[in-house]
Length: 142
Image (cartoon, rainbow, N blue to C red; front, side, top):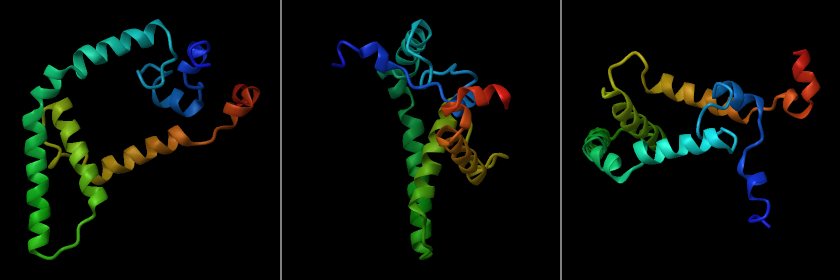
């Protein structure tokens, strides 16, 4: 079934939230299947997810994990409770931030709480209900 109708199942439905968040589907996650998506995928695989590139950031990942372990250890020494979901979010954000921008995540204006709020707002936008998704003629009126 999927072999026959593979191309019909490749694209996500064009919803309003992702359209606004991704500048009219100009990213690899929400772009409709076609030439643009294929080119974006090639670039991502060759430049971002190649084994050489991933291994080149091993030291960044190791340093950030070491910082997290020191932080958790310090909290344990003081018998302070820790929020593991915040720790894992902070670790992920720190690694991505250092890889993308080449800077430490801590000590900048966009702290962990602001970034977490921003990510949650983006998730809410991606998963939110929009009347124009179900009633297209309403979208033209709004």
